[in-house]
Amino acid sequence: EPEVTQTPSHQVTQMGQEVILRCVPISNHLYFYWYRQILGQKVEFLVSFYNNEISEKSEIFDDQFSVERPDGSNFTLKIRSTKLEDSAMYFCASSRLAGVKDTQYFGPGTRLTVL
Amino acid sequence: DAKTTQPPSMDCAEGRAANLPCNHSTISGNEYVYWYRQIHSQGPQYIIHGLKNNETNEMASLIITEDRKSSTLILPHATLRDTAVYYCIVSPPKHSGSARQLTFGSGTQLTVLP
Image (cartoon, rainbow over all chains, first blue to last red; front, side):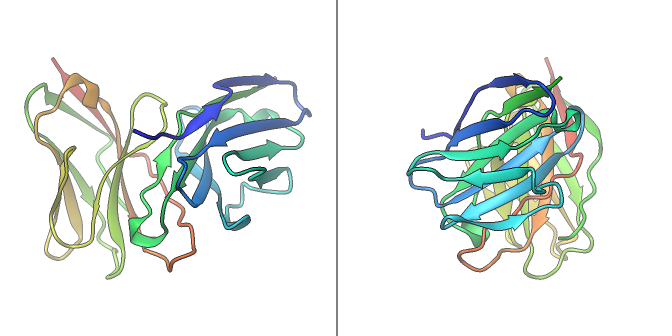
């Protein structure tokens, strides 16, 4: 069964450094998402992406964040200058369709630790 | 999106049916009920969704009341691997071309006991 993959599984970085989290969505999916979950807290939406542009973004997704689909398979989340409070699990998701049919399939997550 | 209310935790004996309730009294006519689960910090996993008719798939059944103000997710024969946090999410469908965010609440921690 096709699945969303994410790399790395765990990323440790120093505060102020840039990080890029990578995702390979399911191959025939057109819609892509990033969510995050701070330890012990709810899963929070960050951004959705379709047709090479951002569809929606939350208040969390400020100028420090950016997303890109650099080729036909990868979807990346970049954090320009990490803060301690960026430490969280980051989940990528993809869906084939939008609207009621857009079941989102999530990857296993990348645990980001900012020191 | 309409707010949902779920009990924070439930236990269920292995092999028995697990019935997880969700209240969504402010749901509007075009909003769907989705269920996802998250097993110990893994990525959320889609289970089922519905509008007003009851739905069944290989994982679970979804029973939505006639007034649509509440629903119940049923895992017919719970196993230890079903121990997870279960999220009930209400969300409107959007027009084609618009990716819809999911708004997760705190969910119900279901513990399946041996």
